[in-house]
Amino acid sequence: MEALPKVLQPFLTWVVGVPATDETLPQPRPRRYLAKVCGLLLLGISLSCWALALQGWGYLWLIVGWSLTVSASRQLQVVIVHHCAHSNFTGDRLFDQYLGRWISALMLILSFDQYRIRHRKHHQDPLLDDDETVEALRLRAGIHPGLSREALWRRMIMGLFSPLFHGRFWIDRVRSSLFSSDRAHQLRSGLVVLAQLGLVGFGQWWLAYGVAWLFPVILLHQMSTLIRQCSEHLHPAPEADLKKGKRYYARATVGIFLGDPLPRADQPFGSKFWQWCVWWLRLGMIYVPIRLLILVGDTSCHDYHHRHPGVDQWLNAAIARQRDVDAHHPGWPVPYQEVYGLWRAIDLSFTSLSLMSVQE
Image (cartoon, rainbow, N blue to C red):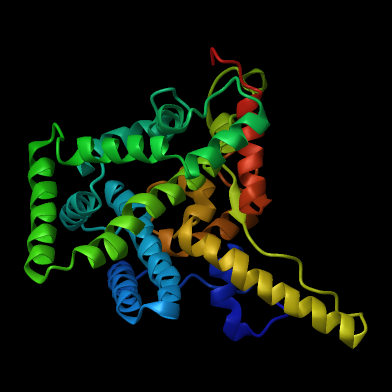
């Protein structure tokens, strides 16, 4: 990517997940990131409402509105709540707890305090049967060891469009929020829902509420979650590491990068021009949407996070990860692994899962 103008490098680093060789770590600004995500959420909702008012061809703006809303909702959960649980979103423990609790209530997900406890177990072993991701895939989508790679792909694709999957997922969310054993979380979630219903009822904006808010944060959010969970971890062969440790856990997560090789410079002008057009088209139509909707925030460098969960460089994870690679991954016996392409990452995960026995 370094053959392209340097002004494009931050954008390309964000999309691809790999920084330029001379790219430096900028100062993290988590509160600015929070404001950006909230602005993205409001913009997405506003565009969806505007599309409903336009009608006709204006409905096409719903695609943009939904995309921005889902991107923001996923970042709120997967990035902000996640790093608040590690107390390294802003570094202010009390602020992070307060923020994580209210976002969890807004998104109607598991209590922040319960999530934080479960997430500690996830970092101890991300592949336990009762791990949050493993359990969700097994119970909601029927994705578990003992199935062939092809069967796992079928179950993921069927789950994306299955009313049963989405019903199970939504019921789990309602139970873990409005009927939570954490009474404070139950109260916060109830207040959020009552505030929404009161505002919508006052303005009689029921259609806009369903289309601009409920549809993206329930159905589309859950579709994005399923795809991401299917690519989150590998399942290393147990015989390769009889004793679980750093070697095993390093093999359980890979970096997921996006993008195509740049067109070669030593080609006729016509051929090179066409290849550049295709390159930019694929970047804009395939890789940017994946980054916006599925691999949000620092999830493309999730392997770096599992090696350094307490580090506050999550905003610059691609650069921090590359520095760790260049330093020969100190403290870890196994080099970083990466795969180019989200679908390849899912296929790699399903291949490793299919090689496990049901008992494992």
